[in-house]
Length: 212
Image (cartoon, rainbow, N blue to C red):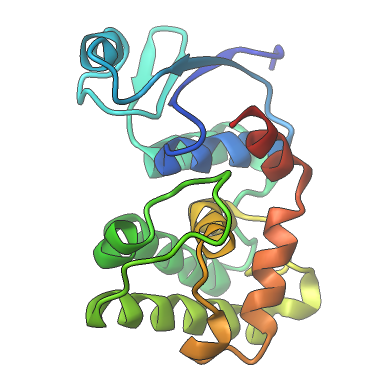
């Protein structure tokens, strides 16, 4: 496939958590794309996004005449078009687990999003943690710990090698880096914190942060 066959429409990098997911996935997998950035929270934001996205939301992947306007749908499309990138684990059972983990992030953790909104360049920010937000953090810590315990022998990511599941949790790693919530207070034995630090040290994440 020719480089930059894709155009990825994203929002402001400091705050657009959903945009980060396919962006870091494509960078990490070495899939070339052109980037189109729409500034969020402006009076022109909505009409500009609607030029590219029928939902009025970002991210959006453009590939020829095709438009894909959901982060997980983008990831699945890229997985189908780039099988050698191995964006899901090869084993069917592990792949089902990875899809479950990714889908849980895609559809859940509402209070975490409100209590720790993404501010990628933020530092020592004070979160607003209610009971449900705390439960969300504990669940994410449990997911990360469990995945690393079961699959860590294959590499540093949730399922050993990098996968769509890691891309889905990339914004969460940034949230835990920007806010003062300590994962040890939510059941971490150190493995979730190690995973957070590893994710934030990825060149793709560093480059996103520099642009943000």
